[in-house]
Length: 396
Image (cartoon, rainbow, N blue to C red; front, side, top):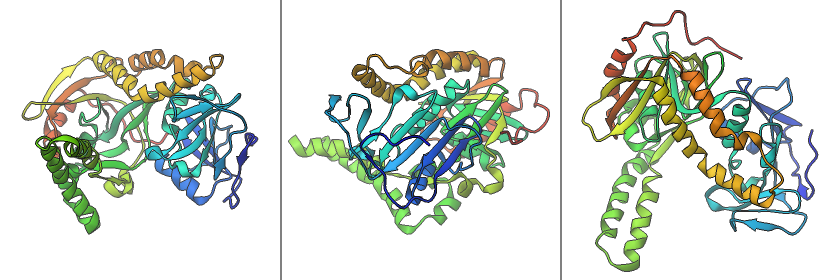
């Protein structure tokens, strides 16, 4: 077990020496001396992937009540992060709450030991650290949804709000098996692997899912129904009122609109038997939202999808890279090779993983009628020979 950094005060009441999370044999995460709430925090971030590691962990996390900094600190991007002679500290947690996290960015790709105050909420940048570690192992994390439909493993990818989750929801209603949503991990053997983290469904998703809507509490249904009109009213008033009230209303509108969602675990949404988490990558869909009416499908080269997703991955990584630049400013002699080479690694892995696969571009209006996606995409999937065998077999 790793030594506690100087100044760290460890809380009493652990549930055991450690609890492990295993991302399909790709990345191992060990939570040291956790309380039950600590395990719940990591589970919300990674999904229910608890499993004993039979190898050294790639990432360790220790939660503490207070993380004391032993010496004077130098800021970079005050008041967000700083460093003393040895450690790099984030000073903000969820929603800007004052909370410290010791995050040694130069350990990513070998062993990254994170110490975080419980008041921070979710472990800051944990998924970014997991994804960088996967890259160092030759596995490509891709912003995508994935499912298996009638023996074909389908990867739906694209920019945010492009329709990835909507495609997954559409085909799950027709019997597809859930592999993953948000992040899908592509391995050298042609496999795709998902994380069973909760799926974010916006108010207009829920409006098209009557069975789910019926299961929600009355308070949640009211919130989802009321927030979008409130946001529209705030924006409208902000455009006509003068001065400070108008400015406040204009800023409030997008904040209110961003609350109009619900988080639903995949098992609850699709059923336990339909959540398989593993599949074979057979077909690629590039889903994009446009000002068209209707759903349009056209074949594209997989290389073109790879080039587009390179830009998408760079955008996803941007907040983390800002943090890394602050780290390099404070510690110019320390670096993480995988972070600095991430773009080149992603480019190479995208070309390798998608090479030769049938691919289609799916364009649609946004928001989209979920059911309208099925027939055009099903026709595209049927336009190429179906691969032999089943794509849903478990992999380690």
